[in-house]
Length: 116
Image (cartoon, rainbow, N blue to C red; front, side, top):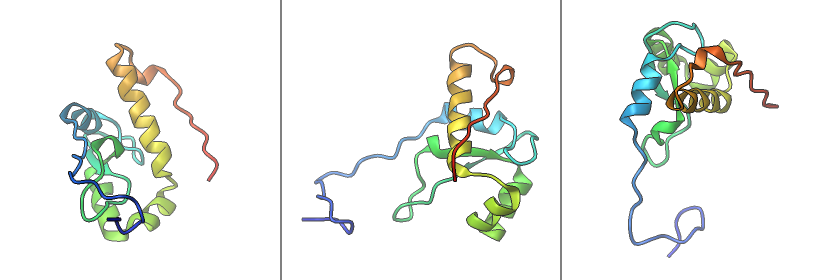
């Protein structure tokens, strides 16, 4: 039996990875648009079959910007605020790993260049 994308279907459903620790880190991080805290974790990638993506795809957005995204839509929000979701996900994960290793993420340049 095949799924809707032509892949083999398994007999069990895989869990979606959740991380309370990472979500707390995102809440305490600076908003990727305004630079303010605290933040709402936003699952930045599109959902699949109505399920939120893994928590590791979250980026920090201020409550105001998170509400704006919900009103304007994903693509309009990204264009207006000049953000690239994939780049922000990578930056957030890099900062989290830096913190886990006992370093201060604010001391580093996280300038990631992704051609889009």
